[in-house]
Image 1: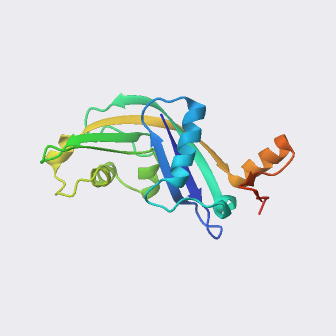
Image 2 (image 1 turned 30 degrees about the horizontal axis):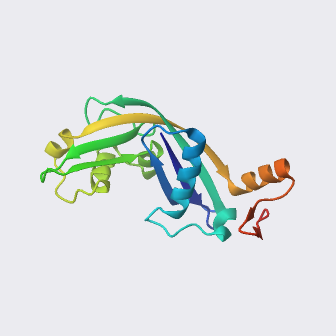
Length: 176
Protein backbone atom coordinates (compact mmCIF):
# COMPACT_ATOMS: atom_id res chain seq x y z
CA UNK A 1 0.00 0.00 0.00
CA UNK A 2 1.25 3.45 -0.89
CA UNK A 3 0.22 7.05 -1.46
CA UNK A 4 1.89 9.68 -3.62
CA UNK A 5 1.58 13.29 -2.47
CA UNK A 6 2.54 16.34 -4.50
CA UNK A 7 3.12 19.66 -2.75
CA UNK A 8 3.85 23.03 -4.32
CA UNK A 9 6.11 25.62 -2.74
CA UNK A 10 4.77 29.12 -3.38
CA UNK A 11 6.92 32.21 -2.68
CA UNK A 12 9.27 30.24 -0.43
CA UNK A 13 6.43 29.38 1.98
CA UNK A 14 5.35 26.08 3.46
CA UNK A 15 4.59 23.49 0.77
CA UNK A 16 0.87 23.28 -0.05
CA UNK A 17 -1.00 20.15 -1.09
CA UNK A 18 -1.24 19.85 -4.88
CA UNK A 19 -2.44 16.25 -5.20
CA UNK A 20 -2.57 13.04 -3.19
CA UNK A 21 -3.86 9.65 -4.30
CA UNK A 22 -2.88 6.13 -3.41
CA UNK A 23 -4.08 2.66 -2.59
CA UNK A 24 -4.67 0.74 0.61
CA UNK A 25 -4.17 -2.50 -1.32
CA UNK A 26 -0.76 -4.11 -1.68
CA UNK A 27 0.85 -3.32 -5.03
CA UNK A 28 4.17 -3.79 -6.78
CA UNK A 29 6.28 -0.87 -5.58
CA UNK A 30 7.73 0.47 -8.86
CA UNK A 31 4.52 0.13 -10.87
CA UNK A 32 2.43 1.44 -7.96
CA UNK A 33 4.65 4.48 -7.57
CA UNK A 34 4.57 5.22 -11.31
CA UNK A 35 0.79 4.79 -11.56
CA UNK A 36 -0.09 6.80 -8.46
CA UNK A 37 2.48 9.52 -9.17
CA UNK A 38 0.69 10.15 -12.47
CA UNK A 39 -2.81 9.72 -11.06
CA UNK A 40 -2.21 12.07 -8.12
CA UNK A 41 -0.53 14.63 -10.40
CA UNK A 42 -3.17 14.59 -13.13
CA UNK A 43 -6.43 13.18 -11.74
CA UNK A 44 -6.92 14.39 -8.16
CA UNK A 45 -10.39 15.95 -8.53
CA UNK A 46 -9.59 18.59 -5.91
CA UNK A 47 -6.98 20.22 -8.18
CA UNK A 48 -6.38 20.97 -11.86
CA UNK A 49 -3.77 18.70 -13.49
CA UNK A 50 -0.17 19.62 -12.69
CA UNK A 51 1.46 21.51 -15.56
CA UNK A 52 5.10 21.21 -16.64
CA UNK A 53 5.78 24.84 -15.66
CA UNK A 54 4.95 23.94 -12.02
CA UNK A 55 7.58 21.19 -11.75
CA UNK A 56 10.43 23.38 -10.42
CA UNK A 57 8.21 24.31 -7.45
CA UNK A 58 7.08 20.79 -6.59
CA UNK A 59 8.12 18.11 -4.16
CA UNK A 60 6.87 14.55 -4.26
CA UNK A 61 6.42 12.27 -1.25
CA UNK A 62 5.81 8.54 -1.37
CA UNK A 63 4.21 7.09 1.76
CA UNK A 64 4.74 3.35 2.15
CA UNK A 65 2.04 2.03 4.49
CA UNK A 66 2.89 -0.68 7.03
CA UNK A 67 1.82 -2.27 10.32
CA UNK A 68 -1.93 -2.45 9.79
CA UNK A 69 -3.78 -3.15 13.04
CA UNK A 70 -7.46 -3.33 13.94
CA UNK A 71 -8.04 -0.79 16.70
CA UNK A 72 -10.15 -1.53 19.78
CA UNK A 73 -12.26 1.61 19.20
CA UNK A 74 -12.23 4.94 17.35
CA UNK A 75 -9.82 6.48 19.90
CA UNK A 76 -7.26 3.64 19.85
CA UNK A 77 -4.55 5.45 17.85
CA UNK A 78 -1.95 8.21 18.26
CA UNK A 79 -1.95 11.52 16.38
CA UNK A 80 1.27 11.79 14.35
CA UNK A 81 2.10 8.09 14.65
CA UNK A 82 -0.84 6.30 13.02
CA UNK A 83 -2.70 6.72 9.80
CA UNK A 84 -6.32 5.73 10.19
CA UNK A 85 -8.97 4.09 8.06
CA UNK A 86 -12.54 4.37 9.24
CA UNK A 87 -15.40 2.22 8.03
CA UNK A 88 -19.02 2.54 9.14
CA UNK A 89 -22.60 2.10 8.01
CA UNK A 90 -24.66 5.28 8.29
CA UNK A 91 -28.30 5.60 9.35
CA UNK A 92 -29.42 4.98 5.74
CA UNK A 93 -27.49 1.69 5.56
CA UNK A 94 -24.81 3.20 3.30
CA UNK A 95 -21.31 1.82 3.80
CA UNK A 96 -18.77 4.61 4.12
CA UNK A 97 -14.99 4.74 4.52
CA UNK A 98 -12.12 7.23 4.43
CA UNK A 99 -8.47 7.48 5.44
CA UNK A 100 -5.91 10.01 6.60
CA UNK A 101 -2.18 9.43 6.40
CA UNK A 102 -0.38 9.80 9.77
CA UNK A 103 0.86 13.32 9.06
CA UNK A 104 -2.56 14.82 8.25
CA UNK A 105 -4.15 15.11 11.74
CA UNK A 106 -0.78 16.23 13.18
CA UNK A 107 -0.34 18.90 10.48
CA UNK A 108 -3.88 20.15 11.05
CA UNK A 109 -3.37 20.23 14.83
CA UNK A 110 -6.42 18.02 15.40
CA UNK A 111 -7.30 15.92 18.42
CA UNK A 112 -8.28 12.30 17.77
CA UNK A 113 -11.99 13.20 17.91
CA UNK A 114 -11.54 16.14 15.50
CA UNK A 115 -9.70 13.86 13.07
CA UNK A 116 -12.44 11.22 13.30
CA UNK A 117 -15.17 13.80 12.74
CA UNK A 118 -13.29 15.19 9.74
CA UNK A 119 -12.92 11.68 8.30
CA UNK A 120 -16.65 11.05 8.78
CA UNK A 121 -17.27 14.12 6.62
CA UNK A 122 -14.58 13.05 4.14
CA UNK A 123 -16.45 9.74 3.82
CA UNK A 124 -19.45 11.72 2.60
CA UNK A 125 -21.63 11.66 5.71
CA UNK A 126 -23.52 14.94 6.15
CA UNK A 127 -25.81 14.12 9.08
CA UNK A 128 -25.20 14.88 12.74
CA UNK A 129 -22.05 13.31 14.17
CA UNK A 130 -22.98 11.64 17.44
CA UNK A 131 -21.08 9.55 19.95
CA UNK A 132 -23.30 6.65 18.88
CA UNK A 133 -22.08 7.05 15.28
CA UNK A 134 -18.44 7.28 16.39
CA UNK A 135 -18.80 4.08 18.41
CA UNK A 136 -20.02 2.21 15.29
CA UNK A 137 -16.76 2.96 13.47
CA UNK A 138 -14.39 0.13 12.65
CA UNK A 139 -10.95 1.75 12.77
CA UNK A 140 -7.79 0.32 11.26
CA UNK A 141 -4.57 2.05 12.16
CA UNK A 142 -1.32 1.90 10.23
CA UNK A 143 2.08 3.54 10.09
CA UNK A 144 4.00 4.91 7.14
CA UNK A 145 7.51 5.55 5.97
CA UNK A 146 7.96 8.69 3.91
CA UNK A 147 10.39 9.44 1.08
CA UNK A 148 10.36 13.03 -0.23
CA UNK A 149 12.25 14.60 -3.11
CA UNK A 150 12.07 18.16 -4.39
CA UNK A 151 12.15 18.65 -8.16
CA UNK A 152 15.58 20.35 -8.00
CA UNK A 153 17.04 17.22 -6.33
CA UNK A 154 15.43 15.05 -9.00
CA UNK A 155 16.80 17.27 -11.78
CA UNK A 156 20.30 17.12 -10.24
CA UNK A 157 20.09 13.32 -9.99
CA UNK A 158 18.99 13.00 -13.62
CA UNK A 159 21.73 15.33 -14.79
CA UNK A 160 24.37 13.40 -12.81
CA UNK A 161 23.21 9.96 -14.01
CA UNK A 162 22.17 10.79 -17.58
CA UNK A 163 24.42 13.74 -18.35
CA UNK A 164 21.51 16.09 -19.12
CA UNK A 165 18.69 17.78 -17.23
CA UNK A 166 15.21 16.21 -17.54
CA UNK A 167 12.99 17.26 -20.41
CA UNK A 168 9.21 17.36 -20.49
CA UNK A 169 7.45 17.10 -23.87
CA UNK A 170 10.53 18.54 -25.54
CA UNK A 171 10.76 21.52 -23.18
CA UNK A 172 14.03 21.55 -21.29
CA UNK A 173 13.57 22.16 -17.57
CA UNK A 174 16.77 23.08 -15.82
CA UNK A 175 17.30 24.16 -12.21
CA UNK A 176 15.30 27.34 -11.54
